[in-house]
Image (cartoon, rainbow, N blue to C red; front, side):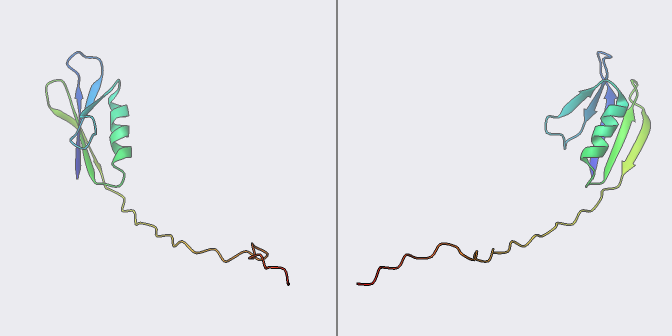
Length: 95
């Protein structure tokens, strides 16, 4: 399960999306809805909990997202049949 936190920035210029599954640690957003949308979209195949905090550190919203199980689609690669009229080995002229 992925856990995301949306916390207001100390400089009051938006919010940070924080999670251990993010490749760069934290992401900055101007609105909490954008951060929630990113977390929901990128955890679509995993279960996730997104908690939104206020400036005092209290949880004001919680979003739970059930992951969608995606089965792997196996595609068999077939060999192509030889083309008719393809290259034919050159024969030697009769002597």
